[in-house]
Amino acid sequence: MKRAGDSAYKKSRAEIIKADFKRNKVLYFLFIPVLVYFIIFHYIPMAGVFMAFEDYNIKKGLFGSDLVGFAHFLKFFRSQYFIRVLRNTLLISFYGLLFSFPFPIIFALCLNEVRRKGFKKAVQTISYLPYFISVVVVVSILFDFTKSGGVLTNAATAFGWKGGALISSPKWFRTLFIGSNIWQHLGYSAIIYISALSGIDPELYDAAKIDGAGRWKQTLYITLPGIASTIVVLLILRMGSIMSVGYEKIILMYKPATYETADVISSYVYRVGLIQANYSYSTAINLFNSVVNFIVLAVANKLGKKISGSGLW
Amino acid sequence: MIKRSRGEKIFGVFNFILLSLLCIIFILPVWHVAMASISDPGKISAHSGLILLPVGKPTLGGYKLVMQNSAIVRSYLNTLIYVTGATSFSLVMTTIAAYVLSRKNLYWQGLMAGIIAFTMIFSGGLIPGYMLVKNLHMLDTRWAMMVPFVVSAYNIIIMRTSFAQIPEELFDAARIDGAGYLKILITVVIPVSKAIIAVITLFYAIHFWNSWFSASIYLTDRTLYPLQLTLREVVLLASDNAIVVDTDGQDIMIFRPLIKYATIMVSTLPMLAVYPFAQRYFVTGVMIGAVKG
Image (cartoon, rainbow over all chains, first blue to last red; front, side, top):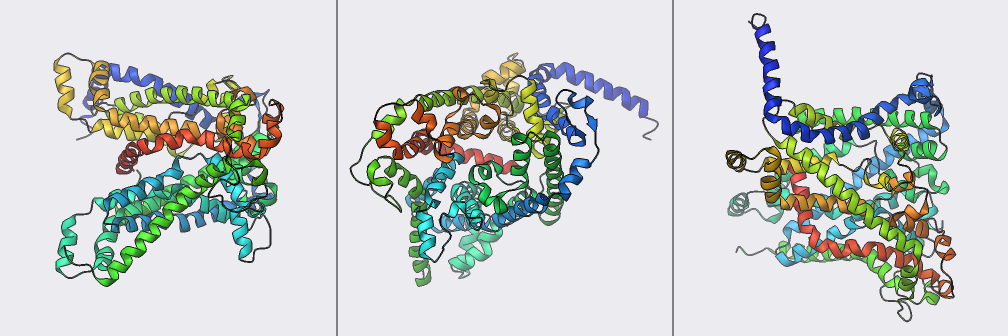
């Protein structure tokens, strides 16, 4: 049946396209600047990834430089930094997920139990404050708190820490990085849970009360299941970005003394590429990172669809 | 109302204390810096621990120094230019893209949306991006702060979701009046979408005000530095020679310990002033984004 109608189908398809263009000409013309912008600033750099497979030379250009295949990738896998930056990336991501993921949920749940509207509103508003502060300022304050004689350094010293300024110690880097992230994003991340909580049908609670369920049981059997799908979707999203850590903040925070635990793939890409001007090598490392990231995201998405029926695409 | 049990009452009190403590933690670091910035410069270096009230006699000397400093004032103006320019440009592009993608009967709609969405999961990365800006001769120009990589695919999607919820009758009515797509955008879509436009403007403006990384790779000329980059030099790289060099007089020696605190405050105050008003819009935006996400 399909074969019989093939030519007719093709013709009508061309006609559809033509009619569509005629009808929506203005829209397509409006879209041209957007399209041009995205091609120039996103798709041309994507093509630039090609330099990962060559010895890029500015004079010879992207198409004239010598091809080297996977040499840069192999060099990276064999280098002494490979294990270090991969380990640091995964550990910071993993601990970040472990500690910063549950807090907004707990915060939203606690806020949900507050009966006084004014107090609730005030807490919520204050919780957004850190989000409006720039990373440079957050790291500046963190430096002030963790220098020798800083508030946090003093506190750690009181508990028996003997290493001096926390910011210069590799042992503390992850804690400080993730801790300050939680401080900055807790309120913001909680918004979505708070809105999910407010969407739960109040009748469910009334029914539970009649059945004699206390607040704790209501939380366990109504509130948590009510926001479970939101939690799953956000968890997938976070797992999908396991290879990308906030490297802008890392670059602000780390020092050669803390590279051991602080240097991640993207901060290494930054140093190799922009400071040492080793363009091809840096691009290769970044491409490795992007590809792994992409695979993880695709797997997480598939998993999410299986578990909750909702994915990103 | 059903009477609360003993356990629930205890939890209520505990919860109240916990959340109050949390609020203190949210505010305290900023408060510390604010108080440090007006402390007695002679005593602050010797002081350790949290500063809850100004140490010694309060002074505005640090602020005076910062305000008189040409490097900081200049980067402040630069930031104002960059935020205005980048926000306007991105906003126009975002609105157009969102409008086109929100129309339902476009044949190429899926493809166009895909082209934009794909950039959220894959990018060329740092070096190809840098080479592009270099080849466009934008390095060390103000354009580098206002054009490359400023339009956010995420914001386009949020705005499109919002545009798509506008009742179709409004479009039909305008069409009957003979309005074309462009006229509908200006006379129908934009007027009824003031809230989402405010949200997106806010997202962009906050982002550009706080951003420093692109400036650090595209700009080497100090006279073009945005505020965040100057702040980074003063506070994090601890090289306040940027400031010391062009400020003369004795003030600099006396108030030097206050410079970093005052600079932090000066660069953060506009955000702190805007945020209580902005946060309502902000929550709306996150929610629209979440529906889509």
